[in-house]
Image (cartoon, rainbow, N blue to C red; front, side):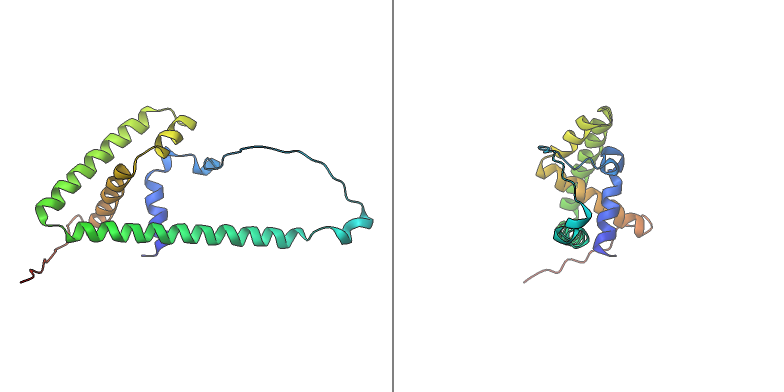
Length: 158
């Protein structure tokens, strides 16, 4: 499973809680208006717009790929932590993660769609984010495995 696909699937779980489809992650800090007209005689001195746009697009793509890689690494780390736990500890952790997920959804859906909901989603603390991700990863793994949890063999060190 590609890292971008995993990130996209995880993001889609919260798509109804964000305004990504409306560019809600962009914040305007200030605006400066200026107007400049170029005449045909000055086109030679104009900066090449297409190369600037290409560089900007490539920079954004690099940033997106870096974020996707970091998200995939974090997901792998959390999944590894779950798989290394003893059964009782894993069940307890997953129960807490489900409770955090249910509480989060209940709270988020009680807030009207828009800036208030975005602020709520952005204000989730790191520990709760970790639980939400663990719940999502585990549920995805169960779904792809026909609802059957993986068989985990712990090796005893002597």
